[in-house]
Image 1 (cartoon, rainbow, N blue to C red):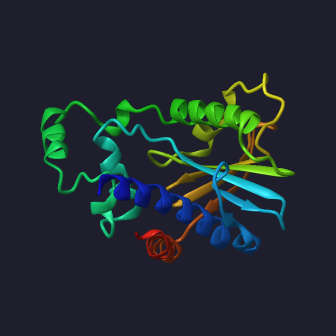
Image 2 (cartoon, one colour):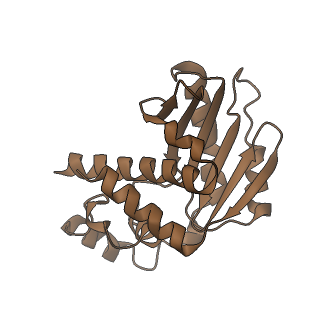
Length: 205
């Protein structure tokens, strides 16, 4: 059961990422097919998209963030915390000790970007365009996102052409190579609701 929940969790974010790209960026991303390393691939577009979360899985706070991010519709599937006594104990032990402010969103994103860049250079299928899609802990403004470009990937031969950073109701399309935000997309609530529903239906096990 826990393995199924974990798989649901992973798939939910992956489908959410794809559909947000389709609905917020370009309908051509409908051609992306499910793969592994990277998570989405298209020979037709010659594009690969890796999806990841800048969320520490070993803290209970991650659950609260996920529920805030995507609502309560599928919260029982995330991490198995809803009906897990260990989750309740964890919440009690850490009450008043862990908060969103204790987490460095910027450092998480920088570290994940470097880790994924290393994998892109080692064992990921490479395309003419390689994209990285990252989910964040909380909303970030453009000045905060710009600080993520400090990640040093100079030692790697290959870098991601674009990085999409999902911050709840906005999506930043960035270039870590040029250290720039190419586009800031504000996602309306009706689209967010549609994304949740589509991702939930496609990933449900």
